[in-house]
Image 1 (cartoon, rainbow, N blue to C red):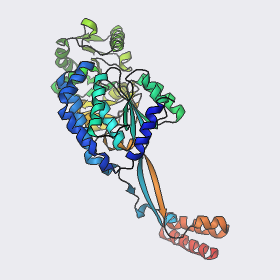
Image 2: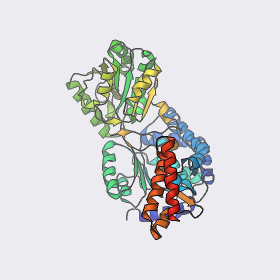
Image 3: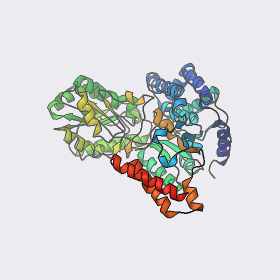
Image 4: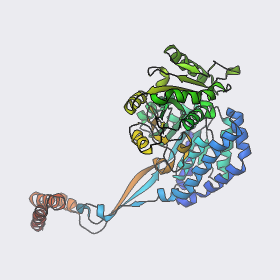
Length: 482
């Protein structure tokens, strides 16, 4: 069995951990949040060495949202995970005497296959939620961020999480599929849709549930009444953040034709002045180059892109007049590239956007927030931001997840925390009224039918007269039964 030793240690630690009250499980979270502050310089250095992120981006997009996610757990986890008593008013008459409580039980051992593009935030959040929900975690970090993974694991241990509860597996490409084959109870994966499909197929065969946060091809909608200066800055930010290595980066910008030329004028300068940026893997560069070449052959006009930069770097590229049939409109890209597509009506924009099977995020820029919310309701996306991009998706109290080719399940928020548990109903029945048992040992079909038929009429019929007839029928059946 894969990782048998680690699994045995995890199950042993989890048995004791899950019996602790949630507030006791939260004590290490407070320490971990403080350690993110105290070890900021070390984390910035580790992330920089692994994937060349700037100190500003590490603090802004890794440490601040990680600390906020941990604070959310401190504030809300005990309430979210508390048992829920079902009120008597919701109880059917035929269950009189029952007292029902829904408990949230941990899955057991959760496998987490982490990603490298945000090696702190996108690992700390899911791991912390799984632990606070009462699970043990086997964590397979990305092979592209080994220094960050080693330091992050050390901080969890220093914060006070018990030995064996969180175990760091080898940061190798092979360890991910091996973890999916192990005797885990749940899997959280953040990564590409190609790998996600393979994991989903294997986990499905074994009936192992999962949360899959996969690729995106996010759409941005710029309506005719939008603030174009704001929209242009947002488009550049969403393409250039982390050098385009973001699952919810804007890839397709749909601009209402009335303002299309003006928008291009405002955004053009950002791309034309951009310097080449390095990407983490050669595969990203190759894929981006292929998608850009395909778009150009179909009529797209590149702005800013001048091919590969030095030492495998790429220039941020904007594809103006992007044809709707270009591969770029339907395939995931992990580089600083975006396309701009004009549209006439909102119906046209929605139709064009839905050609992509990805459904991670979207954004709408308009002065009419009511219209924006109406548009959001028509988009198959897990999150829609209005007059902003990317940043609001890191709100710790809101769920984050995709639809379609972007996966299933959510992280963050109460929904993400609950997703790392399974509901268990415990029913306690008082008294001795058990008509179903009496019928089994002393059958009286006619009387029992009258009782059940009368109860149905009394509790669900239309009109008081029919209800009273049901009550009389029920009483008559009870008398015959006695």
